[in-house]
Length: 148
Image 1 (cartoon, helix red, strand yellow):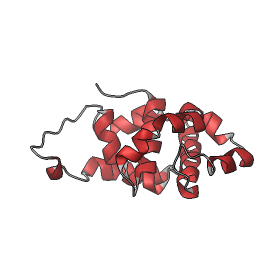
Image 2 (tube, one colour):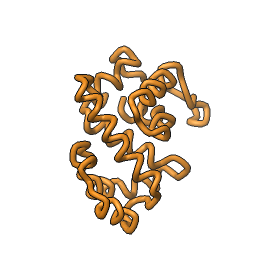
Image 3 (tube, rainbow, N blue to C red):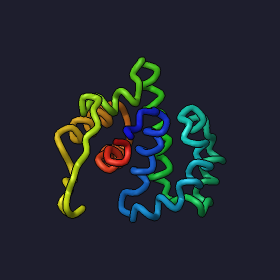
């Protein structure tokens, strides 16, 4: 089933950005901790986090304690809210690059799966233009698969 909830898509985008350079299972095991640490991926609550709360995240062993990865989630929340303020729905944005249609890939071996596509490149450029963190842009192809 294709994911169309904008907040769930935002969470996926943020978690995919956390995965950069690490095993995906590392992030999956910490998913609940990320939800607790980042206000269940409520972008408004994330941008309101103050410096002591952000500094406390660096001590939270339940998440990946990398200042750049933490900052990326906050930057992505700002970009998400800026899109919404301009009347641009995040879920519609995500799905417009595939004409609002789910793409199902079938590969006999996962190693044969592509790592990019024209629609992912276009979406990555559009994310960057809107202020999303670069690791989130590059990780958007894995997001596309679980999201539908």
